Image (cartoon, rainbow, N blue to C red):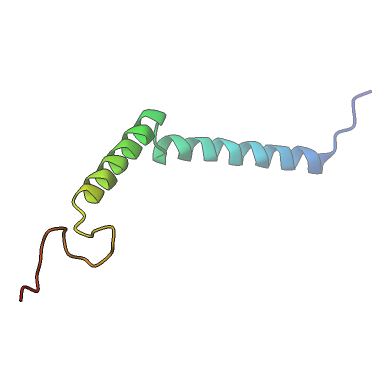
Length: 73
């Protein structure tokens, strides 16, 4: 005599396996590798540092660079 098989369980497990295979395929097709992610992160960090280095605002927040007296009397 053979074993009894739950058809719903079999159908659902097959559907899960197909979805997992599709997800893996999409990850390979559209995802970034670890090296690419690290490169993108380092580029964005460098851009942020460069932008911060070119900031004109002063710590006191008046917007004028230090030593620049715009109102001379």
